[in-house]
Image (cartoon, rainbow, N blue to C red; front, side, top):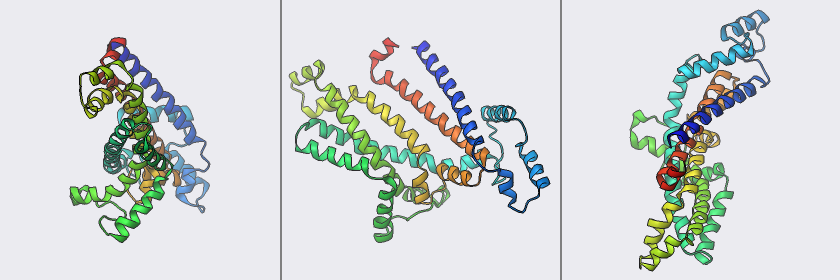
Length: 315
């Protein structure tokens, strides 16, 4: 088990290294000069050259990459060209919005998907199964930004139960902060819940024909108990895989929802930095999100051994 874990850690580290090369290379081929953009169209060549030297843009690519990578390893992500503050401060400020939003959306997604998947698997091939999976298919096909606008119109503009957008900050209190995140979390959770429900149903159907399920039924256990205690745990491996991917998506891929609801999160920060050609912010935030995805997937792999003890022996 220890050797397997060490291999996974080394593989994750190599993946991060390759990802850093890709992120840095992509940022370098973007058109435009950040120094020229910051100074405006009337800037002189001397002023642009001076600012490029101040920002370190006149150094060789390899030197800049190694300096950026070394800073990432030591926690120094550099200074934003646009905001003139350390990037790590911007990340901390936006992470307190994006992380709770992702956790809330993932909790809602799981709370919806597992009961729907259990219900559909138990009624496989019958009308309840068709209705549940039809609703799941509709959820997969529905764009989350469109659903977010519908939620905003109904619950914010019409019923006035929650704010339509913006974030008051956690200093305003826990409930005002959660109220601002409810609609975007629901808009993010519904498509993910639809995907997770379909995966959970398929995984449960696969294990329902196993011998231990027939033994549990032969003992006279109720069907609900068989599904929850025996079938669900052994069907969790594909479900955990999707959960890990969904958490990474919810942290890194909420750019549209954060812009729809005007939330000051990491996705909106990346969007604004790309528009301003603030390369150091884009590189650092994207790399942090890549690292989060890799770490989450490593934790998911480790959770497999907890769910299924047989995997510990195989590892």
